[in-house]
Image 1: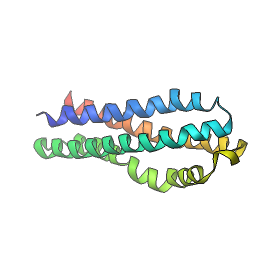
Image 2 (image 1 turned 90 degrees about the vertical axis):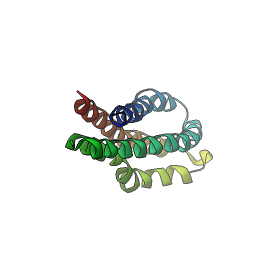
Image 3 (image 1 turned 180 degrees about the horizontal axis):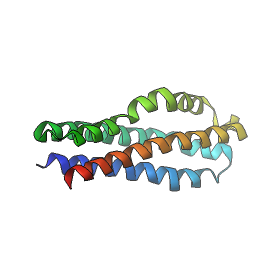
Length: 142
């Protein structure tokens, strides 16, 4: 049964990347002036979106496949935790992303930095979802 360990790897990678963003990348970015912080956030977000969305889908699919193989409900629970980042992002974080994405760096100010701080707090939910999924997958493997 290779699907379960692969689901765990995807969840751990997702959680690790999200944790890095929350606790290293974003706090460092927030030390910059507003225009520079926004200029750094825009391409970082685009690249991070591709990576994290792919990992969320992979973790979900692998978790569901592990459930299909084993019948163990914990794989479904972990898979749901993985994919939950998608609706949360679309419903809650995406409005913030759109405002930040539409803001020209030359117009960035303290309000922009406040919105970026809010974005980081919202992103922490994705970090928690990834950690939850990884923990559930680990439990299912134990």
